[in-house]
Image 1 (tube, one colour):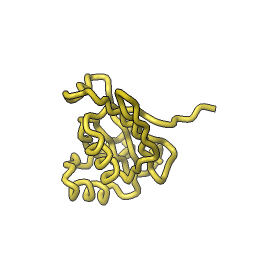
Image 2 (cartoon, helix red, strand yellow):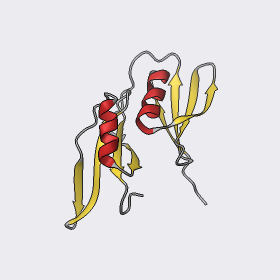
Image 3 (cartoon, helix red, strand yellow):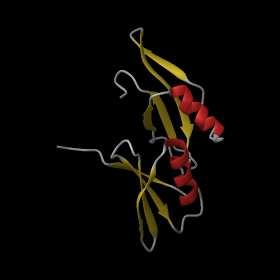
Length: 131
C-alpha cells in the first residue's frame, strides 16, 4: 500500500508561513524539528493525516524562485463562498471563484489564493471527484 503523507515547501519566514496556514486553513503544528542549518515544521489539518512540511533554511536571505515547474496545492471545503469570504476578511486576497466544465457538465468550482512565499493554493468546492 502507498499512502501520501506530506508535501514539502521551502519558506523564508517560519512565523509568517505558519500563521498563513493556521489562519487560512486551520493547520496546526504537529511537529517542529530544529537542526543546525534548517528547521522542519510539520503542519497538519485536524481533518486529515496529510501534512505540509515547511523547510526553513536558516541562512536563506532572498525569496525562493518557484520556477515554472510548481503547480499548486489543493484543499477541498464544504462552503466555497464562506471560505473565500474568510480569506478576504483575513486580508489574504483570494482570487474570484471560477467554474470549470468538462463535456458540458460542471466539473469544479474553485478559487486560488497565494501563500507568503508565492505558492498557489487551489480551494475547491467539495463535490464530484473532489471529496
